[in-house]
Picture 1 (cartoon, helix red, strand yellow):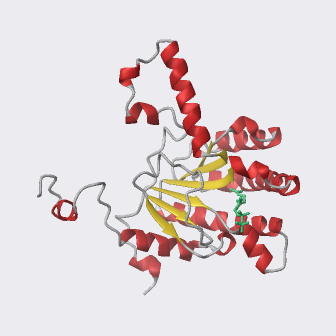
Picture 2: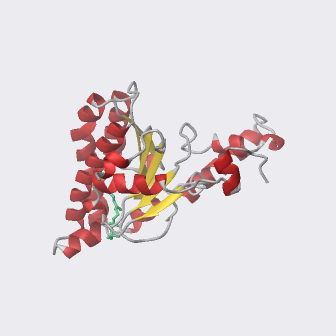
Length: 253
Ligand code: FPP
């Protein structure tokens, strides 16, 4: 049966996070350079964004550029930034039309100015949209985000805006870049690597992890449906027993 037809529309994750891996390998397998893989990867981004919006997914976070990616050869970094600027410029109208709201997490100020401008414009163009929230992680890493949160908490303590006894999960979360978003229930990583790679480490605490060997440029909506079907076959226990979950009874022993 068609995978899409088998999906339970009442049991979809609110938030899907994706590590888009394998652009370079996909290109190499075709005798092309790595940048060709990134260009093809944009086609997958478009398809997965549209499919997520059609399914009614509320949040989709894509790991587009990590803090560590700055260490790649300058030609590749420049090509990725140019691709980002051109893609945002080209797609902003489409996002607006499709009721998609754009957000960015990461060290925004470290991005080239032209990138910042293009992203700011697309963010304001789509600010009133109420459908899918598309979150691009750019110059992002979890350790950077957590350290920033700790610094900002320390500043607020020194300025007596908060008291250390107030610090709990909820307060800490409010200092993260993702404060306005629910935690992802599903994390997908393409291209056969079984790692988190500094991506949303705090937020993924209870996420289901799904790994596929498919490289990102080949990952299209049918692959997303398969990941979602796999997610729906799992039992999410949050530390409780299977019996508690099945009987919906928190006191079941
Ligand atoms: C990982 O593949 C991919 C990236 C570092 C960049 C992802 C960027 C895009 C898909 C295009 C731009 C995105 C948007 C949102 C417009 P890799 O290069 O690490 O591949 P490899 O592991 O095979 O070398």
